[in-house]
Image (cartoon, rainbow, N blue to C red; front, side, top):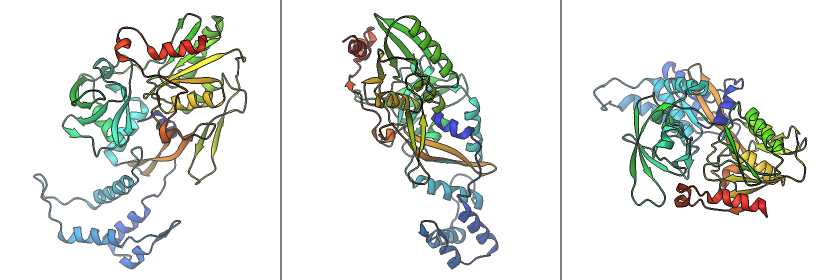
Length: 404
């Protein structure tokens, strides 16, 4: 799950009666309070909706269906069928980040956003309809097993990922420390898919580290957690105290995190009121504009480059897009991932919930992050062979750019 979903989940969310018509139908099926014509003519704000096919299918199942799956011949409960109908409605949206959670899955999701850090240590998302690794966390079990950004996950243990939502896949990959999960991986440049076995462990999330390359100061930012703004501030203090004025911010492999962290970090480079990111609700409600807090401690002497790649997602794209569009930084590297949507967790019943995409992120210049991600000003592909020998071609390109 993307951490931006957590931000929305922490807000006080009310109950949306998104399944109200199914609830009415359930009581109709049980108590015959309404007739089919009344149900079929229910309207919503988008106009009349014909529910007659739904109720005909419901009645055909009631009258004709005989259970044959497995060893049990017990009928599926009406409530389970209602949950299945909601799931089908959600699946029809074609959005891998909008997910309905029946009771058990809802409980698991709530445990996750409360902080469950046992697993393999990687962020995944849907890319062109395929479950894709956004980024393995540095020194995590996935990282140490050789998982790379851009890897396509075809199977989890014996389950094909073709019809899995992102959240269902995450639930299958996650597990207790010491247990093993097997992933079938397809990788660009490798002819055949191959299997990787990963032993789950406790995950320690790295946040910030720094280094210098000649007269260039480098900040590596690995995540946008709750503590990231303070650690980033400390790194900037070290940069200022170094007397240098050339800065590389490395956001490669950073899968994102809290929006508030990205806004705080952008505010060190932007005057008050400058746009950091726009939240577009598709015309349903007015656009929300998030602006710089205006710390703005750097002068025009600053020269800055931001490194991005296919593993830079969500809050990484927000920060990079803000500093790029406001003329502060040059983007170097590869196209970013393109995770520019916002999810909100809504209670449907006391024990079920719906994680629904409610908005998309736009850069200050109105570029949709979801559409294709961010395009670097200076495109540079990482030379994997040289990287294994200690030569980072993308970093070299960023440093050379600032040295001009």
